[in-house]
Length: 195
Image (cartoon, rainbow, N blue to C red; front, top):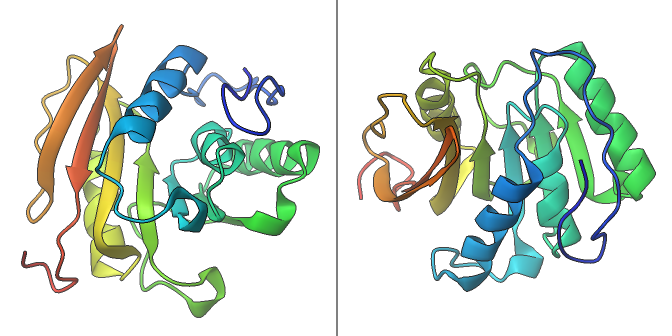
């Protein structure tokens, strides 16, 4: 595993030994960030982006965003092995100053604490496939005030999974890579849930 673009391109990421941690492949990550670089879906300058990486695993998605100039990434994971990998990767890449690890079940975020800063512009969610946890996490993030108005969501799920975005999220696009699907969604413009 490696960073595929930006200032840290080519730098290695610590890989999981635990088979329950399934990182996004380099190829899928590269395709995702190529889409983000050429899309008008992000309404904030990339250098000002605050990234929320739910079910962070190794932190590869958040670290990729930081390598490409994002301002800050918060990695949320309740698995000790994942948090250890994220910490190791942040230290190795020299990104401890622009990232934070938050030990929490992504489906039960609760209110956003002041210690994590303002709401997030982009959310990467890579939950265990086929369990509906992505939908739960997005609703938890919305209810807890974690999402900036109109935040872009990228949810990874199994290609065969039956997924539809929970209300009030808006479906934007779907891209398939092997057995993986990336769903691009938009959070509501009104934090109260209306658009």
